[in-house]
Image (tube, rainbow, N blue to C red; front, side, top):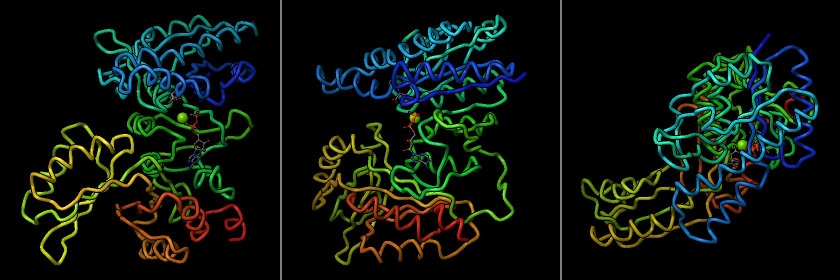
Length: 411
Ligand code: ADP
Ligand code: ASP
Ligand code: MG
């Protein structure tokens, strides 16, 4: 008898009919004799709806109150799912994050899980119940409700699986698994049967929202067997593996990730003296704003340009902070561009293969797409481009690197 944690995302519980279908799925897997813990998201669109309500009242609501508000979305779904299970004669009990006691730090809207008291869940399982837990939420040491950041139900599920020492954590979603890129952008994207944790971490951190990055970190750290699969189709989906490579010859590139949620900030004409990068970026990081790619270039006249990216939602605050510093250090200009996107190639095979970067740049050049910033690490290359070319860039790179279903079959 196995213990399985199953997580169902927003689309999978998007209506009463879908919640009933999830209940049927759970009953079917229970018939093998497995113990089941279910984690659910809010019904699709609900979290956005709640945030929009808050913003109607206040542009920047208190993060504590925002957490009290948005955590209600998941509370609705757990209760409805428990009822759907009862209707089918199955013992089930729903719990909020704080009832299970998913203890987090106090960083509202982006809290981190610190500890889970699994005893209550184990007692319920011993009584033969399916345990239905609200994803995305926890409680801090002072009893305040916290949430784990957008997409955080994935992390709730993996953390529960780790705490319960589950045999597998299954993330049910609205696509068949992890693909070479977002199948909604590239029709020919190929379903990956396995992917390494290392690659999944990169894809998730570079924008592939199929798994929240924290969930992948947890799974790697606590060695939780993790699978992504469809709520709507019977298919084994994608297994995230610990081994370096499960195939004899691993592909050089395993996937392409992209994000539209960044903005580019350029401070030009900065006097080229030691300490300026710190002077410009210090106030930004002191304000808790996450800086992603950074480039600095010295021009012929002895001044330097510093360009970096931040989350788009932080771009206005960054502009204000950097404009103040620019005046102090005597920089010429500050500009902010919100219409950028970042495209990244990810693959562990890149380590041993030269020429990937130049093939990437050539592919983009052939489509007349201008590259604004380039960053690389051992297993990824990212470029920042104009947002309007994003889909063209992803499609042409996907085909240039032979990632598609068609190409793979032909090869
Ligand atoms: P859920 O509500 O189930 O948590 P999400 O919307 O958070 O679902 O994540 C699933 C979505 O992730 C898919 O619908 C797909 O558009 C997107 N996605 C982005 N990149 C990938 C990828 N490489 N593989 C699969 N899905 C991806
Ligand atoms: N409901 C939350 C969100 O929309 C958490 C999740 O779905 O994972 O971000
Ligand atoms: Mg999600």
